[in-house]
Length: 178
Image (cartoon, rainbow, N blue to C red):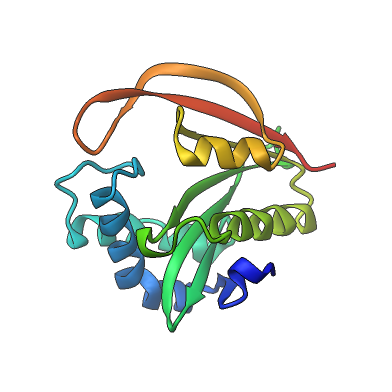
């Protein structure tokens, strides 16, 4: 871990840890959206709505299809990401990165980078060597992925709504790990 993230521990959650983390993960979404992050929700997101979103992934966590990573600092969850493995017969080598979120109070400290590297390491260990993701075009996350050698596939206009309800493009990326 770099000096910037030395007080943050990034680790995988098992299904029981994931269930226990849902209230904190829901709060993470609400705080991120309140500060402009477009992570599948708009400005009216509530703790209950965000918690329900995380709960719908419990079975995927339990089955191993998805691995949840959290960054913990000062005794609380300050970041998250998901590694979702493809279940298709023709893509046992592929996975998707999702929900890279860092609490607004600790942004720009290398936490998202540490989460991404942990997810990439796990993907490699699982034989998943092609990763995909999407993000808001022009966002800080867009810059982060480029700095980690992710390759742009293309931009889809009006892909999702920003927290304020405006349609905005998304950039799709891929990364080959081998």
